[in-house]
Each structure stands twice: as structure tokens, then as C-alpha cells.
Amino acid sequence: MKAASYPSSSGVTRPRGRPAVTHDNRRVQAFMGAFDSVLSLTAEHPQLESLFTGVVHLQPEGRGSTRPLSKLQLFRVLQGCDHLNTDRVIQAMGRERADSSVYRYAALARVASKATERLLTGHPEWEPEAALRKASREELDAPYLAELRAAGLV
Image 1: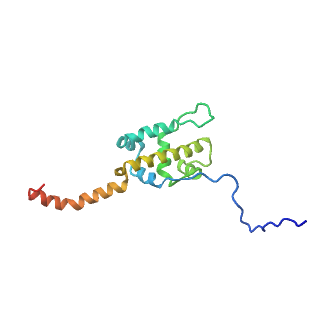
Image 2 (image 1 turned 90 degrees about the vertical axis):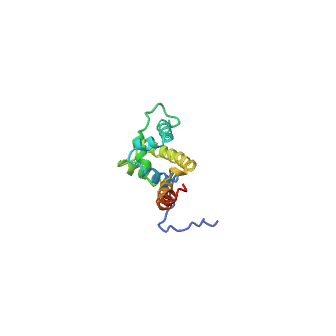
Image 3 (image 1 turned 90 degrees about the horizontal axis):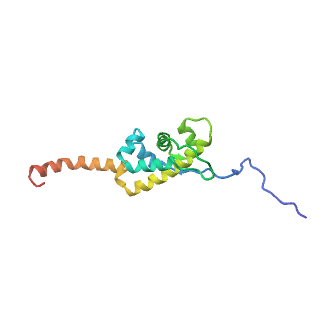
């Protein structure tokens, strides 16, 4: 009987285990970057207050009662990570290693990011680029509007 032939090892190994769960957070990060605190964010967009409250109170399945997460810390994670995975959340939180709270923040930050993206899709005027475009348009239109006002046409 012929022995099975296996390819020789070239030093490259396939990753083992589950692949890392990652979510692209760049759109939400750009949006949150315009705010200096979670209070200023929720004051301008009250819908996000409800979203943040709901997310921080989510309970992982199979666990007993756990304390809600910090809205401020969740805001910092969303603001500081371009991609949401455990390694980047550890860095954003200033931790040295992962623990159960880091895993919860990573999972719930992905939930919050996806929900925020849906809100941004429904409210394109919230996007920083839209605000810049609107400001630029107003600056460009200002001299023409002044002429129209002076002529009594507006």
C-alpha cells in the first residue's frame, strides 16, 4: 500500500481556531470624531442616547445579572477604533490584556456601530461630510444671495 503524500511544510501554517470577529467602524468613527464627549453627542442626537442606553444594558446569553457597561467607555471605543476586534478594543481601553469586560465591550461596540450605521443611513445630514458640503455650499452661495437680496429678488 502506498503511503499518503502530504505537502512539505514551508514554514507557513494555517491559522487555527475561529477567525477573529471584526467590524469596519470607520464611518461611525468619523461621525463620532466630531464630538468631544458622549454628552455632546447625545445632546445633539437624542436617538443615540436611547441606542447607547440599550446597548450598555444588553446581557450576554447564558449569564446571570451583570452590571451595565459604561456609555463613556463605549463611546471611546467607537471613537478610537477603525475596526472593532478584541485587539483594537484592548488598545482603545488602555488595557494590557483581554478580560471578560473587554470581550463584552468588543461585542457590544459592534452592535452599537451597526445600529449607528443604520441611523446614519436614515439621516445622511448627520454625516460630517454632509455638514462640510452644506457649509461650503452656503459659503459659495453667500455672495449671490447678497446680490439677490440687494436687488429685492429674495
